Image (cartoon, rainbow, N blue to C red; front, side):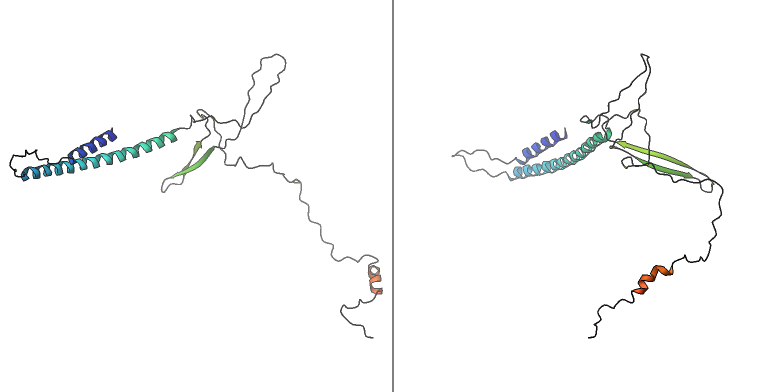
Length: 222
């Protein structure tokens, strides 16, 4: 509607701007007439006044149209961000698990199967709020969680468990060291100086019999 009003206003401006004084045709034998200057000036004043008002109205319509375009862009963006329950395309299956249940006899037994899997498109952010009165000795700590997901699945009524650990990181079971439980035993006392073992002097006998080694780089006199 605003575009139609703008186009009509532009057409009106073109019509008013096209107004020109046109003298009536004169026959060959008729005498010359005086130019109606007052009428021409009145027409010029009329055209100027109408164009001034028409251009002001056109500016108002264009400003209103710009504002409406901005509101439309904001509305379209909010609509695209409003919900992810109805994705544009179905999410592809990347993993398939086949489960086989083996029963005992022909008895009708109800079996509950629980499936757990990681969703890479879901995140959550914790928020802490501490309420404390001035002069008081106690307070109240509130924990809130903001959950966001862009998986393409409907999470209405889904039970969510939150964890601060990174599920994509490998986690091995730690190895616990053995702990001996019992009465504490006193540390054994040091024995101090001991006698050298027997035959220690004969250990270097061959080395002493070889004599001192010659020094490298020394010349033997002739």
